[in-house]
Amino acid sequence: MSMESLLQVENLSVSVEDMQILKGLNLNVKEGETHVLMGPNGAGKSTLGNTLMGNPGYKVTDGRILFDGQDITGLSTDKRAAAGMFMSFQNPLEVPGISLSAFIRSAIHAQTGKPIKLLAYKKLLESTMEILNMDPSYADRDLNVGFSGGEKKKAEILQLLMLSPKLAILDETDSGLDVDAVRTVSRGIEEYQKRENGALIIITHSTRILESLHVDHTHVIVKGRLVASGDGSLVDEINEHGFEKYTLVD
Ligand SMILES: Nc1ncnc2c1ncn2[C@@H]1O[C@H](COP(=O)(O)OP(=O)(O)OP(=O)(O)O)[C@@H](O)[C@H]1O
Ligand SMILES: [Mg+2]
Image (cartoon, rainbow, N blue to C red; front, side, top):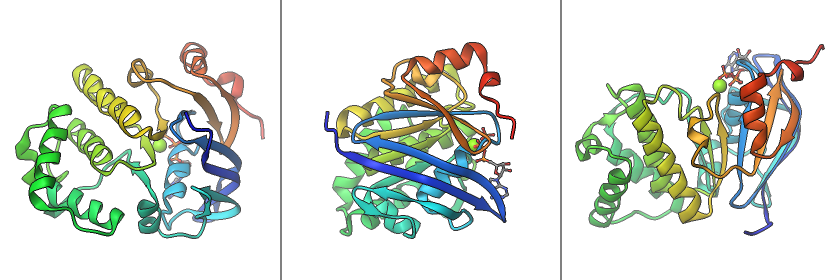
């Protein structure tokens, strides 16, 4: 495994609508590593993901973000995606008027800068949907429109596998999935880990999705601060004892 640093978050402070949410956060993700982010509801996990992706609602008030050797703190979301960043959202948006297939195809185009031939694309899409036990007919349905919660999450993992980013941030991709879907989705994530040596930041409240995945580092965020880091075993410890010992008095 390469020891190249892929993502460096340095002393990051972020505010949303003049509320300070993240406070001096540091995080270092190397190529191919899998990091798990845990923390109580409202701690700032999704805020970190949104900030890393350049969501304009999140204002960096201090610190910086380096990705692949480049300072991306001021970069647009599109440019970050083109640089190889991807985020699967806690609540995927419904997009009427654009099919799942067309959406992913244009995302690949935007990321690589060149169009992908339709026939080759369709083949790749079909085989990738098969890995995820998705019915091929979903490719022609409007993106996420009328998709069930679990189907939306699978569609996110489909995008992950089709786009093969350098870094993927998965925000509660496992929430609301039935037992079989959890297995299918973790198989998809595993495929990404293996195939692309891709780096992952997995935000989760459950350990089900982590059972079959290799985890390098676990971090705990409480009230916008990173309060603990450890290896994969920290996940089990939190599962057993909760976040009480990490709760700060501020
Ligand atoms: N767009 C926004 N507008 C207003 N407040 C926001 C916004 N985004 C985040 N916040 C606030 O920032 C805090 C952190 O929210 P965030 O969504 O990052 O938490 P989280 O750790 O992902 O929690 P959960 O586990 O419930 O998903 C919360 O108090 C939330 O209300
Ligand atoms: Mg969240």
